[in-house]
Each structure stands twice: as C-alpha cells, then as structure tokens.
Image (cartoon, rainbow over all chains, first blue to last red; front, top):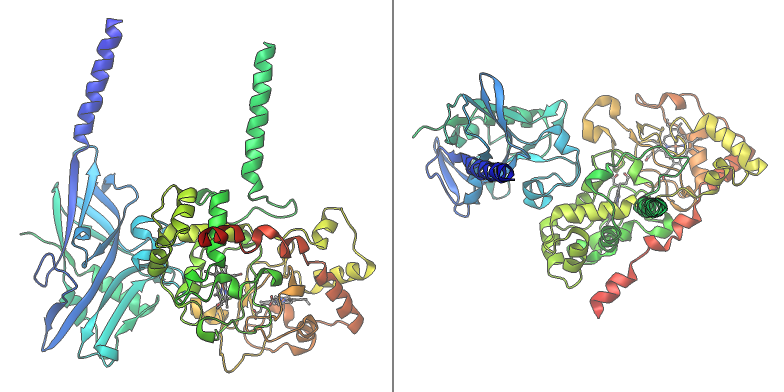
Length: 232
Length: 343
C-alpha cells in the first residue's frame, strides 16, 4: 500500500515537472526592413524607392509548417501549423511555438503559403477561416501572400497596385519553403525586405496579380528570397 | 446469466438504433457508389442541416437582403433557375452562366461548370462575393448574422458556440446541400427491381446506353468529367469553360458533364441555357454538333436517331424525374425557423 502511494506521488511529481518543461517557448518575430518593427498599417508605410514613393497599405501572408531541424533531421514540428501574419495586427507578427522539451536545433524551416492538401480540404477555422480575407472566392484556393499599396508609377485607379499570390495546382504553385541556419535560439527575428520585392516589379507594367499565374509564381519566389534572419 | 444476455441484447438494440439514426441523415442509395465528400470533417447533425437550410433560403447573405441561394436554385426545378438562361442576381443583374441543378453533390469532386470550385464547402463563397449575384462579403455576412435574433442560437445548437465564424457558416450550408440526394426516380426503382420500364422507355434506355452513357454515366448520370459536346461558341459570352481555370489549350470549350436526373424540370439546358426544350437538346446531338479541336471523340461522328427513337429516348429521360426529391418538404423553405424570428 505505502509502496503504491509512493509511486503515485512520484508519478504526480513527474507530471507536474513535465508541465514545467512544456514551457519551452520559441518565438518567431516578423519585421520589415523598412524601419519600424511594429507599424500599424492604418498609417501606410512609405518606401523611398528611387525617386518614386511607394506606399504599402496591406501586407499579409501565411506562415505554415514550422519545423526545427538538427543535421537535416526534424526534431520538432508544430502541430496544426497555420499562422496569418498581418502587418495591421501587431499581435500576429509574433508566433509562439510551444515544445515539450528544450530543442537543440541548427535549422529553422517554414512555408510561406498553404500546401495543396489543405487547399482542397474544405472550410477551416481560426487563421484559415475565409473571413480572414485570404481566400479566392471565384476560383478556390488560399491567397498565400497579399501585398497592396499605391505608387505614382501605377497608371490605375488611385495609383493602386494589388498582388495576391497563391496557387496550389501545377504549373502555378505558389507555396515557398524557407530554410534558415539558426542555432538553438529561442527568439528568431525574420526580416522582410519590401524594397527588394518592389524594385523587382515593373510597377508601370505590372500592378495586378489576382489569380495563379506564371508571373505570380515568379513573384512568390522573389518574396521567398527577401526574408532574412535579422540579428540585432 | 440470463440477465446478462438481456442487458447485452438491449445494449445491441440501442447501439444499432443509434447507428441507424446516425446514418439516416445520409443514406448511400443501394445502386450508388461511395460519396466523395469527406463526412468525417463535417459530420452531419440535424441542427446543422437545419441551420444550413435556413442560410440557403435567407437573403441576408446578399448585400441588400434581396437574393438568397434559393433565388437561383429553386426546389421545384431541381434547385436550378428555371426559365432563366443566364442567372439573374442582385439589382436584376444578369450573370454569365445558367444556374445548374443541385443534385447528389456529395458525389461531386469539382463544382461550377468549369470546375473552378474545389470543394463543396467553398462553393457558397462564390455567389456571396459575385457582384452580379449576391455582391456581399463573408466577413460582413458573419457580422450581420451575429446581430440577428435567431442565428446565434442556431449556431449554438449546431456547433456549441454562438460566435459565428466563416467556417461554421460554410459547413452548415454544405450540410444542407449534402442532403439533396435524388435516388427515387422510376429509373432507380427499375434498377432495384421494384418496377419495370415500358417498351418505349426500355428502347430509350438502350439508345441512351449506346449514345449518351459514356459521359452521362449511371447511376449519377455524369462521369464528373469535362467535355466539349459540340456547342457552337456564343460570341457574346466567349465562354471557354474549363480552359479559364486550367489555362490548358486542350481544355478549351470543355464544360462539366451535368447530371440528367430531374432533367424534365431543370430547363433551360447547357451552360448558357441556350436550349429551352429537351427536343432541342436531342436535335443538337444529332444535327448541331460543331467540330473543333477539342470536340469529344464520342461525338466526332454524328449520333443517328430517328424521330421515333428521339421520342423513346425522351421517355427514358423522363424516368429520371424524382417527385420525392422535387416535393421533399425537408428541402423546402424552413418556415419554422423564420417564424421564430418574427415572434
């Protein structure tokens, strides 16, 4: 009997301490290179792009399938890993990932966008809810990345440009996997260079991408190459 | 011991009754294949089906609260828009396609005449956002629903949460549409040996199997593929069908093969509603096939039918009418829900 009690206490202790271990939090913080780390897009972000000012009014994208690797082997993969990063919502710029154990890793991997299996799985909730405005309504599919703004270079109504990138069906697959060598950090800042994206586009000619296309896939790749790990 | 057996027996009865109740919400007809829809991701329940039915009939889904799904998908015409070649939406705007009937959607993989929608759940977003249909926005729909008296309660009964989300809205609409199963036509009862064809219907059935069944495949009367059935392009619409989605040249002028169930009541016919009567459709297949690069191989050589054979074929097509579907009261406007809201 006493033996039993002893074991139960031990067991409880184990569970309790285990709970403590579950507090291993890893955070990814998204920032834009162009200044403020947290800016509110109710004010627009102004880029000095050569002599032509460019204002960004919307910047939203999906981060999914977050993985930590050690020597190319996955040591931790977040479950149900879908996050909408929206620069008009400061709270969404930081993604906290909880792990049961302390992670020893040398590589961080994640996707920008939504994989094809999820794209054909019907209605989903939370960050994947269609009320998040990241779903094409006339032709099914998630919008992986949304970049909208204004530039005098755009000969459009209110000089607007809109880039809605996505696509999950061959040949227009927009999903991008990003891989960064990062060692055991509990906080990783990822910086997006918007100027690099904008200067890669000839805004006078191309100011609307609203469906899966060759142009959209190309821009998705440029965007993927515009993220870097930011060391303060 | 005896007691144990009795308890066990009761347990079994309860269990099987439970299974029966569960399955009764969606029965796979004996002559049908397994459905495509993954019910495990959206298990049917009576309150969810009722919620979906209310949403289907409620014009609150449109910008000015005038157009509901049922405006273009009316039960008496097998959930299409009878008499309208091109669908008719908000502010009397005319769309670009004929509204299809909504029948046996659980067996369908792609939706719309060009397959632009990849899952039944996502279908409702298209008309809600289309400026010529409902011209609304799902974000606004959700907030309008939240502000009503009836919906938070219906969502709570359905999902255990009175906070309305896009996900729950779409899933509920799917639930109602999934129940729109038509499997009780004369054709079905003949297949189940409960009835027999007349000689005329029997001959029509043979002609159908020879000329039509490769695309309009039994028992769903569609093979769920996209084909060019030789319609001359309407130069004002310039609708290239499946090509618009895939951008693959070989998909040009291909449209989804529609079901022929309840065809008697789902006129006008084809993606642009160009034919008002079935006789015109048959004349198209015998005389009107327009050759083009993507024309289906089955239609390269004209289908030959005498006028008597056309009558027989039509008699067979009428055996696909399912009155128990067209007049099923559980698919109708849910008075009981809306009566509640005016109290």
